[in-house]
Each structure stands twice: as structure tokens, then as C-alpha cells.
Length: 533
Image 1 (cartoon, rainbow, N blue to C red):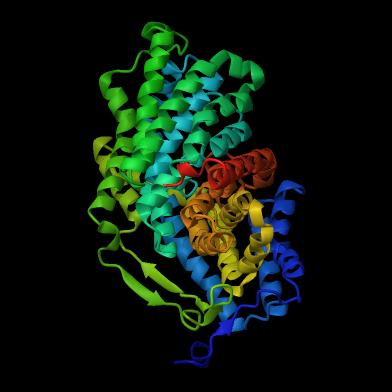
Image 2 (cartoon, helix red, strand yellow):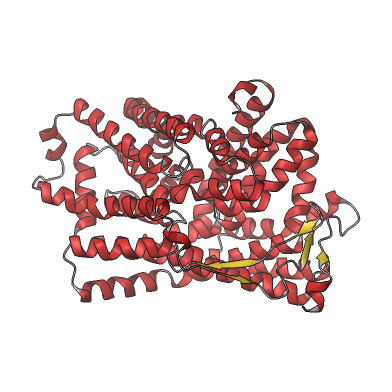
């Protein structure tokens, strides 16, 4: 055992003498990333690289983290980003490119155009909210935004508006995304009952889901859009929210998004058919109505994706052949002073990770769509080219997040916010928001602050299930401004390098959503306590 492992390094909570001053210092890298992207409109790559540099400087000079631990923290983050995130994103973009090349995606666009009656608000609800939720429930990690945005552009949306709409719509399903992985992670890190956590999140987010389609119509076309399409938006939101509540409370987190999205799509399309007869719905497209085979080709890749992800989860394929690697020096080489326990650093390599499940979907879809090996190879190459710059951005922001964690900066921020007293349930949402901004992942947000939320709940005499769930619910608002999520989201619509413009567009919406979750959590803590399972 090396010296560092024998004498773990304790994270300083207040390296500048006070928690408040130290928290302000810890916030500097976050402010740098937000200001560079949102104010100066720099690219996600440059902004995240500067943020990473700032974290390195602060970790070494203010938090006095040993150089070896800092280096291994960044390397650990790179490894997680490469396998857990980029492998998934690459295969999801490959699936999208395959459907594009074979004409499947165009058939999907024509089907949506035919059923949305040419109304941009209805298109946003059907594509970004309903279909985007299906993608989030199956894959996640930015791919739903990239695919939904491209589909909206194909329907006539401006690229920047398409990305904004997709980011805003991507909030409601995030906590149950990737077949419920965020809730599973929250249960594992807190030791709380997974069904109670699922139920609690399922008693917060449906309130957001109910109103989100209505909100989208305002984003797309202002109050006039809301007056014109409020009925369809309400149907989409109510059907999704009701299903999200029922599945999360009665079945658990695994299929919540997928089932909710499928129900919402079916109910919304049925409502659209009642509003406009089928022949009229096709008339404006100027195209020959799709045949049954065309519709099957349009939806089959995404149906295969949903089925594969559910089977992968329920058959336990994720853990087949996995190996756990202790990160040298870093594993148990850091003491989390806030909790008084060693900080584990174990990289779990899963050959059959979620990205591999999406790869299986690509191959099965290629068979259904009768794609040749050449088309498969060319679409894979196209996907690699698309992700060159976004992938470096993801590496930088996840490396930043891991160093932010292991240096103790994230716990300094958490300790400062935990002093909010009676307002903490409201602040709890913003803790999840900060963590998801950093990592682009609700799952990582729960790993970061799940235990902090539980510790604060016990100090304040509140239910730990409520605050732990609020961390996951609040994180959904941070995802729309995460550099990682934005960098992947713009990769399909020609906006690489303009991530700062997108962050500016989405920032206020993000604050509004995080505050809304905070208000819900505060009410559940003090007014409607019966809502806590």
C-alpha cells in the first residue's frame, strides 16, 4: 500500500477560514463556465477547458490537494466520461445517422408533420416532449436533445430554437431517464428504499410534467401559441403526468419514462385525430400518405431501443462480465470530512454497459431497415466526425466535476447551502441543479449530493426521502444548462461552437424550473407532509 493510501488526505471544508468565503472560492470555476458561455458566448470546449484549469489551480493552491490525487481524479473522470457517457452517445448518434441514411428518420418526420397539422406548438409537444421523453427513458446523456432538435429542424424550426425547445422539454423525464438509473444510483448512495425514492420523485415531477407542454407552447409562439393549442398541450401533459405518477409509485423507476412517453404519444395523437380528420392532416405535407411499412420503418428503431433497454435492465445484462478497478492512490485516499468517511474511487468497467445495449439496437435496426455493411460503416464514421469537438467538451466538464468532488470543493458549497435552515427544502433543489450543471447527469448529481441531502434532512428533522428525492428532481432543471448536455445537443444541427448562445437562451428557464421544484419540496416539507411516502 502506498503512502497516500496509508494516510488518506482529508478534504478541508473551510480552507480560507470560513465556510462562506471558501464556498465563494469554490464557486469560481462554475461562474467561469457560465460567464464564458452565457455572457461572452464562447464555445463549450473553451469554457469547460478554462473551468477545468480553474479547478486545478484552486485544488492545488487553496484546497492543497496532493498533485497525484488531483491527477488521478481528472483521469478517473475522463474514464467515466469515455465509457459511461460517450460510448452511449456515440451509439445513439449512430442509430440516428442510420435512420437518417435509410430514410427511416424522414418517414418519422413526415408522420409527425402529418399528425401535427403543421402547427409549430403541436410539433414541439409531440417531438420534444413526447418523443424526447421516450429517448430519455431509453438512452439519455444528451442524445434525446440532439435527435429531437434535428427532427424539429426538419419540420421547419430554426436550429437554435429547436435546441432550446428540446432542452426545456428534456426536463420532466430526466430523473427517471436511462431506465431509472438516477433513482437506482440515489438509493445505492443513500441506503434509502428505492420504491420510496421512486414514489417521492413521482410526487414531485408530475406537477412539472403536467404544465411543461403548456410552457413549451409559450416558448415556441408566445401567449398566442398557448391560446391556440392549450387543449392538445394539456392532453399531452396530463397523460404523461398521470402515467409518470402511477408507474413510479406502483412499479418503480425502471420503465417510468418509457411507459409515460408511449401513453402520452398515443393519447396526444388520438386527440389530434379527433381535432382534425386524417385526410386533412396529410393534405398540407404535399406528400403521398405513408404506408403501414413506412410507419413501421419510422418507429421500429426507437421501439427496438425501448425494448432492448428494458430487457437489458431486467435480465441484469449490465453486470455481465464487469470488472471493478480501484483507481491508484485515489481509492480511499481521500477522506470526506463532511461525512467523516473514505471516498471510494472504483471504476466499474461493464462490457455490456448501456452504450453496448444501444449498439445492439443499431445492429438490430440495421437488419430491419436492410442497411448494407457499407452504410453501417459510413454512418459510424459520420457519427465520429460529429462528436469530435463535443466529446472533448464532455471530457473536460466531467474531469472538472470529478476534481471538484475529490478536492472537496463541492462539499464546501454543500456545507454553505446546508446552513439555510427552514429554507433548505427550497435550496435542496438548487443543490441538484448545481451538480447536474457540472456533470450533465442526474445520476452523477445524486452520487454527489445524495448523502449531503440526507445528512441535512436529519439535522433539520425532515424526512430524508423527501430531500434526497428533491436532489434528483432539482437536477432536471440543471441539465438544460449543462455544457455536456448542450455540446451533445447541438452536434446534429450545425451549432457546434455556439453553445454559449444556447446557454443564454435556456438559463432563465432553468432557474424557473429549479425554483418551481424548490417550492414544491418546501410545501411537501411543511404544508402537505402527507405527500411524503
